[in-house]
Length: 445
Image (tube, rainbow, N blue to C red; front, side, top):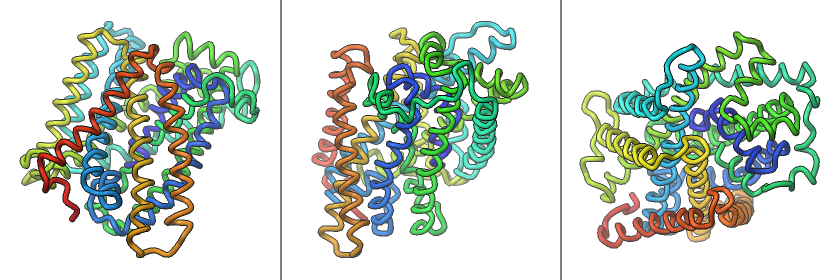
């Protein structure tokens, strides 16, 4: 579920070109390694605390245990904003992918938002059902998209890259620090969105105390290494200068066109189909995570009790799932009404908001881990309970601050940058307001 939320083919197709253009150019792949190292320190404390957190709310449950229910509710509302933003972003990207797919086969030019509306409907139906159905869909798509990306990366390497040869920019300090490395790191961290998915499914795991740490470390290593490799292959396919130029002129087809040159027409067509499946799997994964957040919050009194009911047949959080589908459709409708571009505005802006949100969530979780082990002497391993989480706090704190400072550059104006900051503050404030109005809400189990 973590890997499906990361959506390998979606990330390398949608995020990598935007990050090359907005971040540090051809040196971008190294930022996945940097992000993985920072998150590894976080993961040490996260997994150490896992056996002591019995709730399925992931980040916000950890913050509740470590800092208190008010901060926990604030984190829960921030998580809802974060994952709702990224889900709508990927719905928009799905609209563009399906629009281009239909055109490539000589079909009519149908507005992207109609395809996005279709994805909301289909994902809503699957989300209404149980996790078994969703898990099977995600698993099949995941294996196929990872394989096609690896085939592409091997083909680029064997053929020595494109017109400029294999890229070495990611190993050159002056290239790494060029452009806007802060935004590059932000986009790299966005590749790890859904990082908490293992803990969200705690109630559905057979042995969560063992499987959650394994899934967390495994996903961290695979995501970091895989994305760095494939991003490097994309840049090598176009060349250091050519990659930046292509990202600027046509980012949406950057990977597909490179795939056509290096793995042939058949590979290109397979990649097209798998890209649709990858985007779909990503949306479905985030839909399930958000539905379970709503379900958990409803069962702790922070949201209407009906949202905490399970379907009598499917055993799914069906009401929470439907409410999530309705909110996603409403947000997409707002984007359409304002005439926002699905890639340069809807996708880029919402992924930026989501990344800032998840950085704040992980930073808050790091603080909660330190406070929890300080007040509860249940683990004497200083590396796991003090040193690693402390390093994670420093890394995430610096990364969040630098990214927030560069928000105006990402959003295209200082005004929009401040709007994002205000939105984040209001969301956190809403959590505190609910905590004040409902004293029993989010009471630790």
